Amino acid sequence: MGYFSPGDPVNRGEMAAFITRALAHTTARPEGLTIQSDGPGEVIISVRDANFHPMANAAVDVFSASADKVGEAFKEDGTCDTPRVSDVGGNAKECEIDALDAVTGLSGDYDPSTITVNVKAGGTTVWAWTGDLGDKG
Image (cartoon, rainbow, N blue to C red; front, side, top):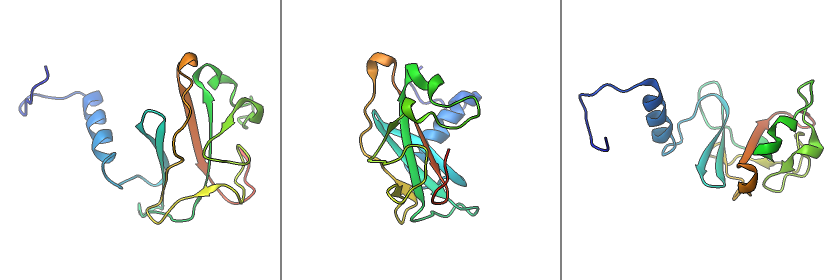
């Protein structure tokens, strides 16, 4: 209704939205790699260890596809279909951890800068992953 009601119950969706929005204002993140929207055409990618501590210098491979091509981004065996995706943040080789991939800062976060959003295609989907040098997706 647009007003504060501290005595009213909330559903799961409302609580999930609350938690997501609250965490967006902190550096608290779960174990592993997470990616979240930070505004139109912007994401923050975070890497945390098993104790939720930031992992600095973790290589991050980031790539995208327009919303109408998401179904073509991966082959039947689950590997990346590189001609169907685009690099993000100056990534040299999509779907491969290589020496030119960006790395997380001391905060365990990486901001790939502005991402081109294909509005005509219904938006853009962004993927991020981390691994050892030479790992391919």
